[in-house]
Amino acid sequence: MNRWTHPQDALPLVAGIYAALSPIWTTTTTRATTTMIVLGAIAALAAVAELVRPDLIPLEGLTALIGVAFIVAPWVMGFSGTRPMAWTAWIVGAVTFLVGAADLQVTRMHHRDSTATSH
Image 1 (cartoon, helix red, strand yellow):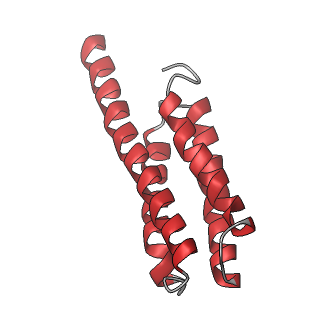
Image 2 (cartoon, one colour):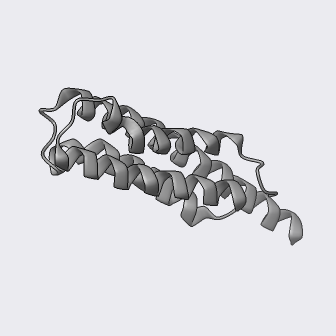
């Protein structure tokens, strides 16, 4: 696959940037702010890597895993009571997970098809 051929990878990029910047306009706590900035930056960097190298299955899995991390973060990091930030984490997590999981399937099918035709 060529670079920039997975435009859906822009969604985790936007979601990661949104998460990292969300403490600016969202009611938050110190722990929630730190969590969202770190996870947002990781999500954005992984998305950029996926846009550059859309054929790497581990990156697709990493994106899905980051989505799960966003989803569980409010409970694990103790900010589920800060509803605006918790909802931000849950929504960003759902988007990131769904795109990562879908990309993982597409990339696996592409790899399987390309190996089947090369034999």
